[in-house]
Amino acid sequence: MSLPFRPLFFWLLTMTFFVTSPIVILFMMGYRYSFDRGVFIYTGSISITANPQNNLDIHVNGSPVSAETNEINRSFHIGGLRPGEHTISVSSPGFSSWSKTVTIHSGRATEFWNVLLTRNDYPRVNLSLPKGAFDFFPSPDRRKFLIPVENDGEFTLLLLTQATQEMRQIFSSREFSLAPPAAHPPVQWLARDDSSLLLSLLSRTDGSPNFFLVNSDTLSTVNVKDIFSIPHLRSVRPNPERAETLVALSGRTLFELSVTEPSSATLLSENVDAYDFLGDAVIAFESASGILSKIPRGNPTDRIQITTAPPENYDSNSQGTWSIIAYDERRIVVLNREKGRLFFLNRGENSRSWKRLSNDATGAQFSDDGKKLLFWNDWEISTVFTRTWEVQPVREEGTRLDIGRFSEKITFVQWSKDYEHVIFSLGNDIRITELDDRGGRNTSPILSLPHPPLRVSSFGENNRLIFLTPSENETSSFPIFSSIVFPEPAGLFGFGT
Image 1 (tube, rainbow, N blue to C red):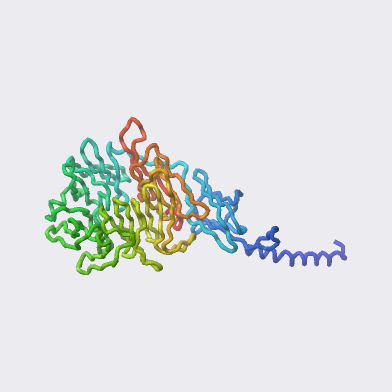
Image 2 (image 1 turned 90 degrees about the vertical axis):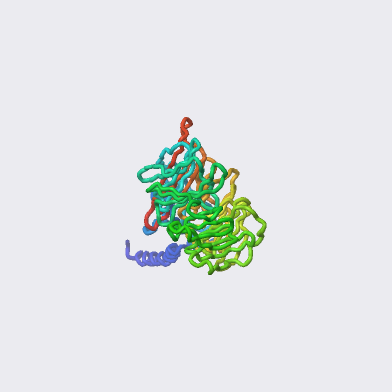
């Protein structure tokens, strides 16, 4: 370069530096230039945590994007998005896709922490069960299952060890059949004991309730009626805190019963229509008054009245079978199973509500942390936030979400393991839907079966979804006990562990 042009070139580079430097700095700070508006706009971003974690394809507005990965929780961060609507999709080979159209705001990260993709085809572990098997009940550690069988006028209970697929008979009778599920399951394990259980059975002769204590190791069996002299026992349940102790109703009188000392029955309370356990106490409900009380089992005279009035819109003449689900003494559900009346006591930071939540509910379930209550009827699924939810999307205490309404009857509604999705059965399908309704709610099939399932449980051992189906072979009448790994196993801090 000739000498006269060197100063000119120097000043050209200097001016270019001073012009471009602010632009580069603004770009690095998240600003983008809008040619339509003629100004710099502060951009937003998206953070995504997905299951599965690997081989993910992320698109924004139909174009693939390169996302920064957080190695600790395997989340993906996409920056530099202009404010406004964007369509985001996540996919992986062999899995269903997930997509939403969401609004991005200036300077704000929009977070999706529970993106769940379902496999197009799940490898299944199948076990053929005896003819007439119709249900299953997992042990507390989820390693064993009790399988009831009704065949040729005989009721049989089988014990299945899932790891070895060993199956053996532990109870059999032609005089009794399994009672239908009501306020509690008809098969219950005793406290801190994986070999003793309580069966709720009905007499084939007169339909009267009977309760049997069974030891799966010794195969010993005893009818509770033969131990205790208290008449008309019903709603018998094992005490979760005290081994060899039962709690039961006789009429509307609540007793605590010792299997080892049958004569030392303790009267806990009268005028009780339903009860549930809460630590070393019992939560009792009196339907005539609509009042809830807490009764310490060791000292029933220290009874505490939790509520002083019935819930709003309560009918004191309501008849039927009642049940209670108590998360703690500040979050309690009471359900009239015949009429579907669902009442919810929620004493949080901003509410003291004790009100009717549904007129036709068939079930309810708290999330593990108690911050959400799932409830449903034959056609609808809903949830209510019992406490403020501070993770995106933020929900205030008392917020209700109507998750879905279906034209076909739904069954086996339950939380998934992350408590951000709901698993349910619809016709021949087992499906899952998300709570997050920003930009639409994703609902995906987990499995499509030849027949409607007889039972579904999302709480099997080692991330397994367990289900029971009729035989898939038209020439066979033997039901199939199946399991799949769902959701995909993830890392220590990952979703789905």
